[in-house]
Length: 210
Image 1 (cartoon, rainbow, N blue to C red):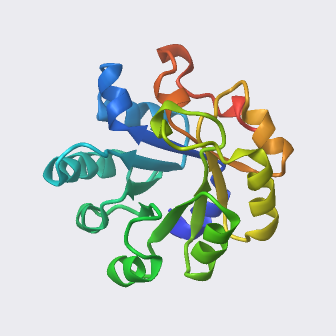
Image 2 (cartoon, rainbow, N blue to C red; image 1 turned 90 degrees about the vertical axis):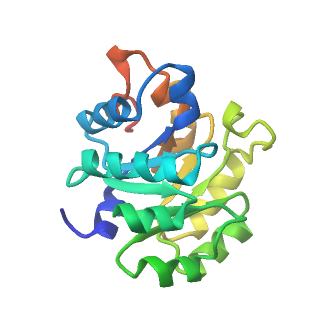
Image 3 (cartoon, rainbow, N blue to C red; image 1 turned 180 degrees about the vertical axis):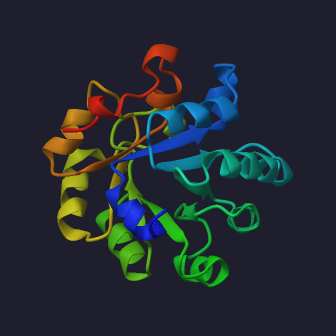
């Protein structure tokens, strides 16, 4: 595998595996990861907000083995889990550990991503050394029921100002992905649309690429 950060820059689709969505659809983490791997997606995140840390560690170690050598594997929130299971990086929220502290813990070669909801937050994340940012929610999404969509206009502003990879996230599907590209963004993160898709069209990259 080429360097993690070089691989990141080439990634246009970011698959977010959300444990709660899988449970509702009676799908397993392993099956989801293998499906994503078969589609050729090179950037994958595990998002599990409700399980105990010990269980998240077990999940992360399993997914790390499945995805090793084919996709970059990112852990949402749990910095210690990311370090122990050999993940390729960590994704931080605005209320999580700082980028600088995370960097000291996981090292220079690992990837650090940050969720941003404003241009100010995006500029701060970049200045602190984040490798990428996720901007959203762009559209309304059940995963962020209390979060008001930041909208396409903000995404457009951020894409023009930020030099590191910017992934649009939140409510993105095959019917509205074109709006992301229309404002100059190149990368999308997909969660619900990817995990809820039928077995015949779990995710077709061509559907998302311009």
